[in-house]
Length: 249
Length: 274
Image 1 (cartoon, rainbow over the protein chains, first blue to last red):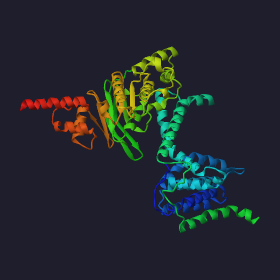
Image 2 (cartoon, one colour):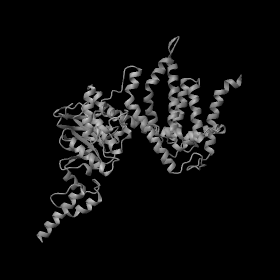
Image 3 (cartoon, chains in turn brown, yellow):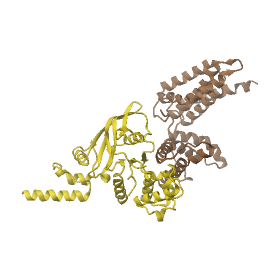
Image 4 (tube, each protein chain N blue to C red):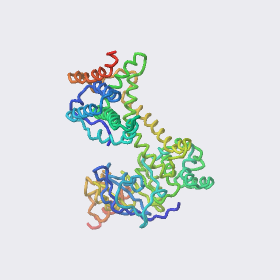
């Protein structure tokens, strides 16, 4: 099960990329730092999943992927659950629910956002830095390409690993230094291939007319609609909730 | 390190990915002394079968026997993927080809001697290239060095995934000849989209389709490909030239010279009849 973009035409899919990104990041911050009870967090997660379901988001892969962080959840539950009075299961459940909430939000965000939408959001995030000469658009492109090529590189590593083991390579050394040496047959070919691939991609992009300094139009124009206006209230509410203690002082 | 296995037998190999069955009760033999080719469309399970034989894909049912004993792939296989030159990580050709022997505890003098002989066998002059960086070699030389480096320890079973990809026609022919020579002492199993370049009279072909495996000799494969257009796309020139003669008891090899000779002979025979 791999979390990846699944096209759709539901409410969440149609949101502006900026709205999607802002809501997702606000929700991640909310799940990370709130001090609500387990029951309330569980209700919020259930509500979030219901909205996703009604919006036609493919939730199965996201939910199944929680298994991957199973060990992390157990460790967090054990660490958070123990207090001076002994083990408190409610504290453990609350900690687990917070992590599950963050994971679900991130998973749903990646499921409903295409590559161009992710680029658009990253670009918008870095745009203020362009005022001090930071190459915002290029940096956003680098990040998206890196994410896009991650599965390809992983597949490459697996192929090289199998072939080197068949040659007789022992890829697990004992100490730190011997581990690093043992990984040479895997690391050097992988890095070489990554550099070759990067060079080929750069040439292919230039051959198609990509120039760093050129002004460019967008293949997809994203609009900010009424539904985005409603969705934009979510991060505002979250920030209001989080900043409320400071406001009352 | 000598090659002793003469036959690799697949018994009801079944491989599943989630709920999809990729290989379903696959049975058959790969033998020494011939090139064992695996063909089929993308996603038909060719590479998965190689990985299963190599012991890297462990989720399967059935058994793989080597001369009637359970096959232990560890140390007994060489697995060569497409573009094997991507595996280079040593600073010189000598180190690269000798790496597999070094990892098996062979003495340095013996490593050099064996490696040089093996390089020669693969058509590379060890005196010229021993100290050169592997990436300085030409495309064809890199491919031969990679194959030499992967097989220098003489594994009984050599598994290759599209070894001819990216080579020019001359390079393909040279490499095909080397693989055929290698097949005399090893069980050589090749996944390929270009069986015509590797097919000899003594080859065997495993055609994978919808999880099932069909075994062919080169001749039966060509008959099937000529009679069923969906089966395998033969080169257009071959189909055009041979189709009028497809009722004949034997078909020529997928080679221009053989086809020319075949047509000449049948035309002469038909003329004699008239």
